[in-house]
Image (cartoon, helix red, strand yellow):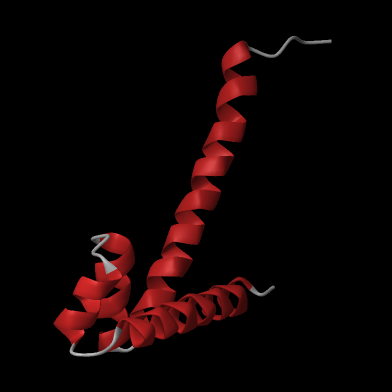
Length: 88
């Protein structure tokens, strides 16, 4: 029986994980592109820039409660879009 080089045992799973992660990122980017402009703004401010919800509400001219509702709906929409695109 031929011995495997330690590199092949270590690197192959890492490469597969990186390819899977890249695929998930591509799916997520495609799903985000399907959001409305306002949804993309809220997503970017709340999750990308990590801006406080009260500040986002003030910037968007709405209430804090509405931003929380939007965030919840955006996350649910993204989950649905990614699931549909991945075929699950």
